[in-house]
Image 1 (tube, rainbow, N blue to C red):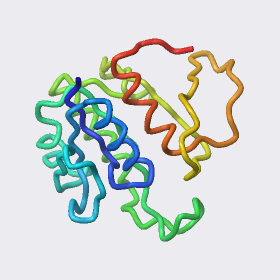
Image 2 (image 1 turned 120 degrees about the vertical axis):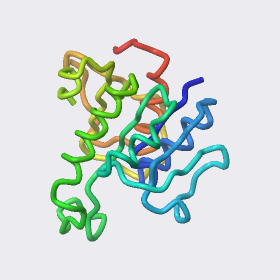
Image 3 (image 1 turned 90 degrees about the vertical axis):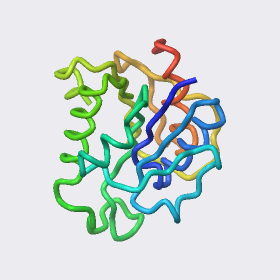
Length: 171
């Protein structure tokens, strides 16, 4: 069991992460803008704040052993080309704050920038996400030789990160 912090837990992928990690027995905490609107299992601790604020992030990360970030810029609609409504530097600020807090607290992460901090990390980048049900475990490729799927369900992606917290195998 891992004390886990999820960033982006209120989003369409993040809610799957909260459910999957809790179902695997992890102690899950999520930093979210508005805890009242997040649908999460009752065992998930919701903390109000934003990863763009380093103090909020530091408080939420206290005592956690790993971070799963499924952050994304908010947009005016679900269309990936819709107008962004997040602050222009949100992802940059959030990534910098996350790395600084993880480095300070000795937390593991699930971007190549993390190597500069000497942090244990795994990067999972799914290009096209769908809202279809999970169909099974994802295959990962360290060398890029696996044939990518055209789309990956958010539910399958959510299961990938918690399953790799205790496993270091990459196929």
